[in-house]
Amino acid sequence: MSAPMDSNLFQQLGLKHPLIVAPMAGGPSSVELVAAASAAGALGAMGGAYLNAAAIEAFAAQVRQRTDRPFSINLFISHSIPEVATDRFERAAAATVRYRQELELPSPQLSPPYEEDFDAQFEAVLRIKPACFSFVFGLLPVGYVREAKKAGIPLIGTATTLGEARALEESGVDAIVLQGFEAGGHRGIFDARAADPEIGMRDLLAQCVGTVRLPLIAAGGIMTSGDIRAALQAGAQAVQMGTAFLACAEAGTSAPYRKKLLETPERRTRTTRAFSGRFARGIENRFMNEMDGKPDAILPFPAQNKFTRDIRGASMAKGSPDFLSLWSGTGKGELWQNGAAELIGRLFAE
Ligand SMILES: Cc1cc2nc3c(=O)[nH]c(=O)nc-3n(C[C@H](O)[C@H](O)[C@H](O)COP(=O)(O)O)c2cc1C
Image (cartoon, rainbow, N blue to C red; front, top):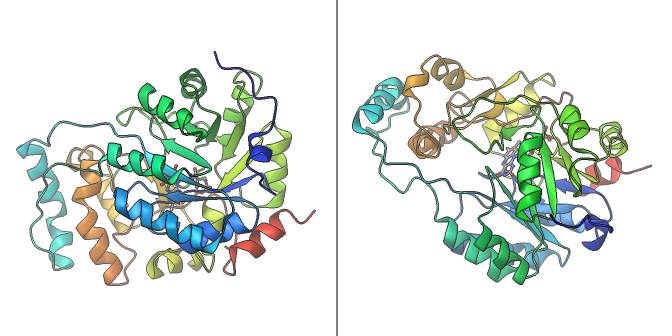
């Protein structure tokens, strides 16, 4: 059992504000957004999951050119899956043939590996030595925990249940992101095939405070200074916010995605496995609505993520939101479109 942290991890990191601007892999977490968040006194976070080791190192070097403030790197824990069987692939191809025709794409190909090489990514993290390393989708294997500790890199795991939080605590992490069902993007559920526990952030926080003896970081649906205050008062030591920063000037959010986010402040979202094979929350669109009716045609994560990449890429190139993953949390309201530093200043104005 690890000892309780008597000092505040976020004070140790020298942060001005108890805020992590969420790692958002796939574009939104640009070099500019990470650097701006860190320079403004929050913790900027690189979403490195879809980058190879060289790209992760290049990204970190660019952040360091812009700021000497601490930032974190985030990766997806790898769960290797068996090669996708031919009949499953054919079902997935048949269910999407119409979209590829519409987008003028060739017939799909799919072969392993389905994701970046985690070992190489992790070795890049050790070389970069960021202020923090955070991860989702499970536990960091014990050998990696040892390596990170040896390098002096604090670890932040992600939990969607009390059970996952306890397992992370046992594994030796330094802090835990409690990701509520409201959160935009991928659900951090350890078992990709399990049903979603659907626990809201406040309930999850209430279950973990006093039971899990590590700093807890609340995530999911936090949009305003009032939301931040409520999470801190309920026992969180910090918050992690993604959606609120998606339309910031520095965010790498694509034009059709940004347009959709700004179109209506209500943003109708739900979770789907259609894009990657794992549950993730995003704004409803045609791909989600049509594919969710065909669960047998959705491949397991991360194969489905690789399988749909051409469709998402072509949709973006066409400027259409119909086939894009439009990750967004349940938080409502107009999104901030100016600089991230100004948003952070406003969130912590009092
Ligand atoms: C576009 C987008 C991409 C995301 N990518 C990641 C990621 O790469 N790694 C991760 O740990 N969390 C990721 N998340 C989830 C966030 O860490 C966080 O849990 C979530 O944004 C909090 O909910 P909110 O969006 O309502 O603020 C992503 C969220 C969004 C909106």
